[in-house]
Amino acid sequence: MTQNLITTLFGDPFAVMNTIGLIAFAFVGSSKAVREKFDVFGITIVGLTMAFAGGATRDILVSRIPLALQSPAEISLGLLGVGLAIVLSAVLKSPDAHPITVIADAIGLAAFTTTGAIVATEAGVSVFGVIAIATINAVGGGAFADILLDRSPFILFDDFYASCAVLGGCAFFITDAIGVSGSTAAGACALVTMMTRLAAVTYDWGLPTLQGVFK
Image 1 (spheres, one colour):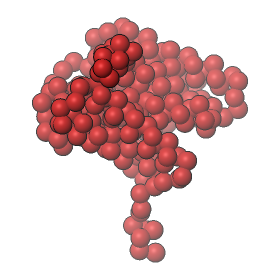
Image 2 (cartoon, one colour):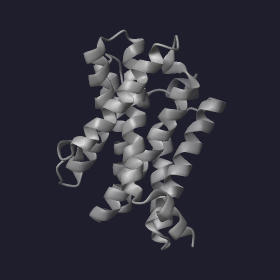
Image 3 (cartoon, helix red, strand yellow):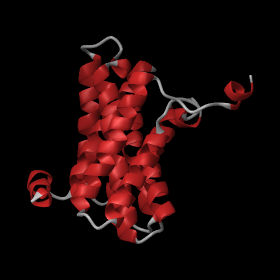
Image 4 (tube, helix red, strand yellow):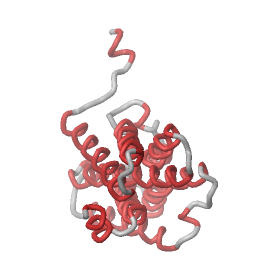
C-alpha cells in the first residue's frame, strides 16, 4: 500500500528527484554567482554548471550520454532555477545566505544523491560504486561551480556536506538490499541526506582537520 501511495504521488522516483535537483541546484549555483557580482551570462553558466556537472559525470561513469544532451526539458528546468535566483536577488540583499537557499541546497543534495544511487543500482555496480556515484552526482556540480567562482571546492575543506550524500547513498543501498521497493529506497535516501544536511547546518557540524586534532 505504501509503495502504491508513493508511486501515485510521485510517479517515477528518478524523474521526480531529477526535476527537483535540477531546479534547486541551478537556483543555488546562480545565487552564489549573484553574490560574486557576475553578469547575467555568468550567473546562468554557474547555475547550469551546478545543476548538470554532477549528473553528466554520473552518466559518463555508467557509459551513457548525459541526459542534459538528450532532452531540452533538462535545460529548461535548469533555466527555471536560474530565473528564480535572479528574481530572488532583486528582493533580498544576500540571497545566497537566505534560509530559502540553504533549504534548496539541502533539497538538491538529497535529490541528486538519490538519482545517482538509482542510476548506479540500475547499472549493476558494487556497493562502493552506488555510494560513490550517488556522492559524485550530489556534489560534483557544486565542485565545478566553485571552480568557476575562483575558489577551492568547499566540500574538500569545510562543512558537513559530501558526508550527507555518503550517508544517503548507504541508506539507499541498505534499503534496496533488503528488498523494499525502489520508491521506498529513493525516499529513504532523500530523507536521510536532507535531514542530515539540515542538522549539520543547524548544529554547525563539521569533520575534524589535522590542525584541530594535533593543535
